[in-house]
Amino acid sequence: MLKSRGLITLSIVTLTLILCVGIASAELYKWTDANGRQFYSDVAPSSGKAELLDVKVNANPNSQRDPVNTLATSEAEKKNAKAKKIVMYSATWCGFCKKAKAYFVAEGVSYVEYDIENSRKGRADYKRLKGTGVPIIMIDKERMNGFSKGRFAKMYES
Image (tube, rainbow, N blue to C red; front, side):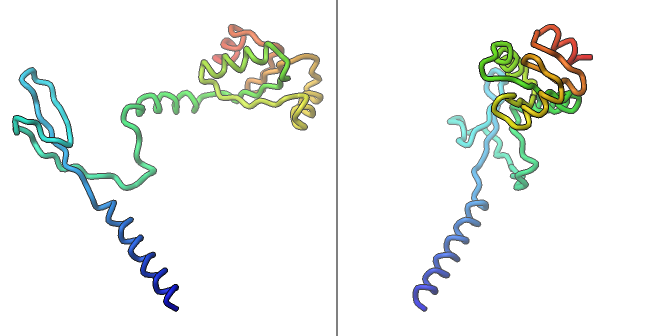
Protein backbone atom coordinates (compact mmCIF):
# COMPACT_ATOMS: atom_id res chain seq x y z
CA MET A 1 0.00 0.00 0.00
CA LEU A 2 2.80 2.43 0.88
CA LYS A 3 4.71 1.54 -2.27
CA SER A 4 1.73 2.35 -4.51
CA ARG A 5 1.12 5.67 -2.67
CA GLY A 6 4.75 6.59 -3.14
CA LEU A 7 4.54 5.70 -6.80
CA ILE A 8 1.39 7.79 -7.26
CA THR A 9 2.97 10.75 -5.44
CA LEU A 10 6.13 10.47 -7.53
CA SER A 11 4.05 10.32 -10.71
CA ILE A 12 2.08 13.43 -9.75
CA VAL A 13 5.24 15.37 -8.88
CA THR A 14 6.90 14.32 -12.14
CA LEU A 15 3.85 15.30 -14.18
CA THR A 16 3.66 18.67 -12.42
CA LEU A 17 7.33 19.38 -13.15
CA ILE A 18 6.90 18.43 -16.79
CA LEU A 19 3.93 20.77 -17.15
CA CYS A 20 5.79 23.63 -15.43
CA VAL A 21 8.66 23.43 -17.90
CA GLY A 22 6.31 24.57 -20.68
CA ILE A 23 5.30 27.61 -18.63
CA ALA A 24 8.86 28.86 -18.18
CA SER A 25 9.96 31.45 -20.68
CA ALA A 26 12.99 33.61 -21.36
CA GLU A 27 13.06 37.32 -22.01
CA LEU A 28 14.00 38.54 -25.48
CA TYR A 29 15.54 41.95 -26.08
CA LYS A 30 15.77 43.93 -29.32
CA TRP A 31 18.03 46.93 -29.90
CA THR A 32 19.68 48.93 -32.66
CA ASP A 33 23.37 49.86 -32.60
CA ALA A 34 24.96 53.13 -33.79
CA ASN A 35 25.27 51.72 -37.36
CA GLY A 36 21.56 50.92 -37.58
CA ARG A 37 21.96 47.12 -37.26
CA GLN A 38 19.28 45.36 -35.24
CA PHE A 39 20.16 42.76 -32.61
CA TYR A 40 18.12 40.22 -30.67
CA SER A 41 19.30 38.49 -27.53
CA ASP A 42 18.14 36.96 -24.28
CA VAL A 43 20.67 39.23 -22.52
CA ALA A 44 20.07 42.99 -22.39
CA PRO A 45 22.86 45.12 -23.91
CA SER A 46 25.28 46.91 -21.59
CA SER A 47 23.93 50.27 -22.78
CA GLY A 48 20.57 49.31 -21.28
CA LYS A 49 18.67 50.72 -24.28
CA ALA A 50 16.63 47.77 -25.47
CA GLU A 51 13.02 46.88 -26.11
CA LEU A 52 11.69 43.87 -24.20
CA LEU A 53 9.74 41.78 -26.71
CA ASP A 54 6.60 39.81 -25.90
CA VAL A 55 7.15 36.44 -27.58
CA LYS A 56 4.30 33.99 -27.97
CA VAL A 57 5.40 30.39 -28.40
CA ASN A 58 3.46 28.22 -30.81
CA ALA A 59 2.93 24.99 -28.91
CA ASN A 60 1.62 23.08 -31.94
CA PRO A 61 4.60 20.93 -33.03
CA ASN A 62 3.04 20.31 -36.45
CA SER A 63 3.15 23.99 -37.34
CA GLN A 64 6.73 24.74 -36.29
CA ARG A 65 9.33 25.10 -39.02
CA ASP A 66 12.96 25.95 -39.06
CA PRO A 67 12.89 29.57 -40.30
CA VAL A 68 16.28 29.20 -41.98
CA ASN A 69 15.08 26.28 -44.11
CA THR A 70 11.54 27.47 -44.80
CA LEU A 71 12.35 28.70 -48.31
CA ALA A 72 14.35 25.56 -49.13
CA THR A 73 11.57 23.35 -47.81
CA SER A 74 9.00 25.22 -49.87
CA GLU A 75 11.13 24.80 -52.99
CA ALA A 76 11.65 21.11 -52.21
CA GLU A 77 7.91 20.66 -51.66
CA LYS A 78 7.19 22.30 -55.03
CA LYS A 79 9.77 20.08 -56.74
CA ASN A 80 8.37 16.93 -55.11
CA ALA A 81 4.81 17.89 -56.05
CA LYS A 82 5.69 17.64 -59.73
CA ALA A 83 8.40 14.97 -59.32
CA LYS A 84 8.09 11.81 -61.32
CA LYS A 85 8.25 8.34 -59.82
CA ILE A 86 11.71 6.86 -60.37
CA VAL A 87 12.29 3.12 -59.97
CA MET A 88 15.71 1.62 -60.64
CA TYR A 89 16.43 -2.07 -61.07
CA SER A 90 20.08 -2.61 -60.27
CA ALA A 91 22.80 -5.02 -59.17
CA THR A 92 25.48 -4.50 -56.50
CA TRP A 93 28.33 -5.07 -58.98
CA CYS A 94 27.02 -2.62 -61.61
CA GLY A 95 29.15 0.50 -62.14
CA PHE A 96 26.43 2.37 -64.05
CA CYS A 97 23.99 1.63 -61.20
CA LYS A 98 26.45 3.26 -58.77
CA LYS A 99 26.79 6.29 -61.05
CA ALA A 100 23.00 6.60 -61.30
CA LYS A 101 22.61 6.41 -57.51
CA ALA A 102 25.33 9.05 -56.97
CA TYR A 103 23.62 11.31 -59.52
CA PHE A 104 20.21 10.87 -57.88
CA VAL A 105 21.64 11.75 -54.47
CA ALA A 106 23.57 14.77 -55.79
CA GLU A 107 20.51 16.10 -57.63
CA GLY A 108 18.05 15.32 -54.83
CA VAL A 109 16.04 12.94 -57.01
CA SER A 110 13.85 10.59 -54.98
CA TYR A 111 13.94 7.02 -56.24
CA VAL A 112 13.18 3.45 -55.27
CA GLU A 113 15.76 0.78 -55.96
CA TYR A 114 15.28 -2.95 -56.39
CA ASP A 115 18.26 -5.28 -56.59
CA ILE A 116 17.56 -7.86 -59.32
CA GLU A 117 19.68 -10.50 -57.58
CA ASN A 118 18.82 -10.01 -53.91
CA SER A 119 15.18 -8.87 -54.00
CA ARG A 120 12.21 -11.08 -54.88
CA LYS A 121 10.32 -8.05 -56.28
CA GLY A 122 13.43 -6.94 -58.17
CA ARG A 123 13.83 -10.36 -59.82
CA ALA A 124 10.12 -10.61 -60.69
CA ASP A 125 9.91 -7.09 -62.15
CA TYR A 126 13.17 -7.57 -64.09
CA LYS A 127 11.77 -10.74 -65.62
CA ARG A 128 8.43 -9.03 -66.43
CA LEU A 129 10.36 -6.14 -68.07
CA LYS A 130 12.36 -8.70 -70.09
CA GLY A 131 15.58 -7.19 -68.75
CA THR A 132 18.89 -8.05 -70.36
CA GLY A 133 21.13 -5.59 -68.50
CA VAL A 134 21.21 -3.16 -65.60
CA PRO A 135 20.29 -0.60 -64.65
CA ILE A 136 16.75 -0.38 -65.90
CA ILE A 137 15.35 2.97 -64.79
CA MET A 138 11.63 3.62 -64.98
CA ILE A 139 10.64 7.30 -65.04
CA ASP A 140 6.91 7.05 -64.41
CA LYS A 141 6.06 4.61 -67.25
CA GLU A 142 8.98 5.54 -69.51
CA ARG A 143 11.94 3.13 -69.59
CA MET A 144 15.66 3.84 -69.75
CA ASN A 145 18.12 1.00 -70.27
CA GLY A 146 21.53 1.84 -68.82
CA PHE A 147 22.32 5.29 -67.44
CA SER A 148 23.38 8.61 -68.90
CA LYS A 149 23.07 11.92 -67.00
CA GLY A 150 22.00 13.78 -70.12
CA ARG A 151 19.44 11.20 -71.21
CA PHE A 152 18.02 10.91 -67.70
CA ALA A 153 17.73 14.70 -67.31
CA LYS A 154 15.97 14.97 -70.66
CA MET A 155 13.50 12.20 -69.83
CA TYR A 156 12.92 13.51 -66.30
CA GLU A 157 12.20 17.07 -67.47
CA SER A 158 9.84 16.07 -70.30
